Amino acid sequence: MESITVFSAGSFRYALQELSDIFRQIHHIEIKAFCGPAGILRQQIEQGNRCDIFISANPENVLQLADSKKIYQKLTIAFNQLALTMLNLEHFRHKSIFELLFDRSLRLATSTPSCDPCGDYTWLLFDKIEQCFPGEGEALKRRALKLVGGNSSNIVPKGKIASHYLLLNGYADMMIGYAHYQLRSEVKPSKYDVSINTNSSIGLNNQAFLTHMFPIEFEVKAEYVMALLNNVESAAKFFQFLRSDIAKQIIKNHGFLLE
Image (cartoon, rainbow, N blue to C red; front, side, top):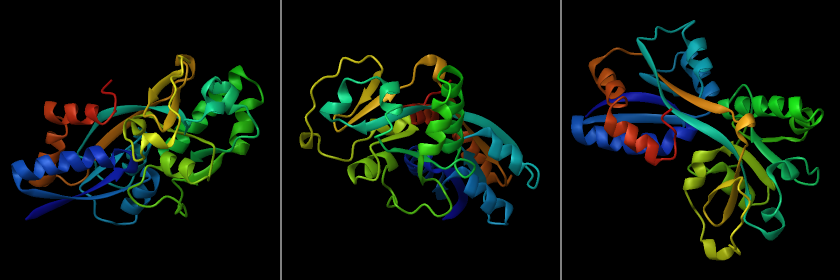
């Protein structure tokens, strides 16, 4: 079976898997997907690794890649937001997002800036916080435990959602990451007390975890951009498929925003 190689942001891997399965059924073309921090994937492409389509969680990696690789087409296919996630425990339920963030006794996990767009977006968030709460944004940068998204990050097993794994296994008390992950649940909710929280900032609940969405003035929107790096027919077909209404619905179903 003919195949193409796709390098994709790790946060897009579940959507990509479903998209690839449907595309293979229609066109009989296999998608060989390699998922990880987009900054590291970009470096691998620059070093000569074969890639037909690159999906980055930010436009910057695609722009940087254009310095050394020909990009035939590029397109924004999705957006995402940052959220603060913690275990659904009583002592977290009645605190605001900033009460939690500014609590020096709580360990905050993040991704790694420069290597992973999620880390870059998180640092932009810290800059916004610094503007409104002088000293707190810089303190968050110092406190942040960069446990994922780096060259040597190997704590989280392949296929696991980072925030869920890190929180359940005691590596951190809370984590800033992408909001779409909280639509997925990997644990039995009966393990935790699941009383209702009336805090309006809690936008997503999958029972085992609490997820606080940031107020609109602190929102940082992640932009996912795909780039066609090899203009062969099979790769061009998949690129066009990712623009289709079917693909958009699948992407939306995985928790991403379309605008």
